[in-house]
Length: 405
Image (spheres, rainbow, N blue to C red):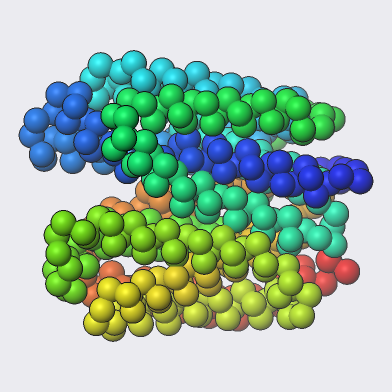
């Protein structure tokens, strides 16, 4: 993938980040009111509403994981800006269409379609790599990761507030307008990117090509693990706080929202400033330390006796993950040939997003069979295991780190 040198590259990176935040809010924002909206659509049974809420919420990341390699391939073939414009246009139409749904099946189909349009994340990553100078790559990918987290942070808050004030359909209009603004921003502020030669290998061949690289495999595992840990704790967190910490049922949702928001903010801040750390310390040391700290902080979360102590260590965990994700992306960028850097983000996004799918299912079953503590301890163990893998792969990561200079 050809590096593009342009004077106002920082402005372009910030524009890409704003597009990510707007589109992320559009996709994620519905999660705060989906169960209630399904009741309005006619599901009176609580169990049935919960079942459909799981389907509607889970289908989107699953479809993104399937479609991401396809969109990055098309971005290489026809130009990233053109494909991003197409994706955002389709997301805008589908989001507005959600306003008119009459039953859960229609909402499910539209959310599935949104997932199929989910290639905006790897395409934005590809554009970030194209426009960021090689020596500032960690900074650019830190901004990219921070924007991803901000979309996850602000989406449910905006969706919940708008739904409470104006009803459960109005948020779809707000999100549709956000997607439209992202589309306009792409057309006005993102330069054209010359299309590459049409790839000769299939998408499956590309996936196996990258998975043959041990460094890429390890970084995908770390990203999968971060997604697994972030989303896996979500379904049990309200129940854990209510039953183990004695919080009043009427304020549990608010407390959980505050904790999630603070943890997301800490993660975003860490991602934004990770480049300052990489100037002082090797990426290998930061990656290994932050991964180990994730494991330690999960143990400490379980050991806390008050909800605010739990919130503190959730924030520290988020901060550690905020260091892992952009450094993993940087190592991946340096570990693959320059002409393949556009395609690699489709593969990494596709595989790491399965953490969002597997996490809630795994932790839900584990909590049911072994109790809440098993979720914290098992997640901590996996992070510590990942730290050992980083130690074993040390030489490869150090070599990739030196490529920055």
